[in-house]
Length: 292
Image 1 (cartoon, rainbow, N blue to C red):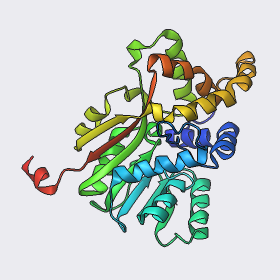
Image 2: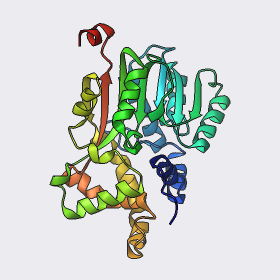
Image 3: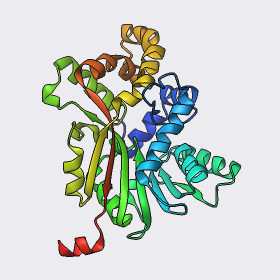
């Protein structure tokens, strides 16, 4: 039998599959998050919608130019470079994939942003920054992949300055007991093959409890699923016909992204199976911490 892979290796393997590498490259130009479609703007291009989602992040962070921010799970750096170039933020990015980090650093140099933005390979569950280093921390659709989200929250809390904000763009699921047997089977397949370790704990409405347990306050959760539905619809249409062959030959596990795009689509619309959330929280000010 082969050696058991660590969760980090399984996440890396998922992003290095042929389907993931070419899917993200062809459809999203290397970006690994959803786009934002304002009401009435459903015909925006994917690239326009991706930048608008990053603008939504900047609004939630609400930081002055020059503020230092941690990008937890930076990928190829598109989000960090947009925030640095358009909002003047200084950003430290960390990601498990060394190939993504190398690409991000090349982009930063090409855009002459390498003095403001730097990226390195690592696991953000093992942050080595000093306490109170950052003016803000964000994760764009990466927290679902960590093996221990509680440990990640503790690390974010430690490296944030008192009074600073954590912003998460993340998924949640219908509580398992409300799913049908078919829904549970598909959800389990996607969680296993896409290394979505934390997603089972992210039931609708649970983020305030999870963040408060980690010491955060001023917690707000916005369900913006309608604002990402145009991109979900594009993925569904793109994957629908290839998926019929995938399903016929029983290859759903080898093509988990296509499986998710098609099998979850109607359940998201009709049964609230999946939500896309923007979650923001604050590390309490020092005087509040001492009083506790």
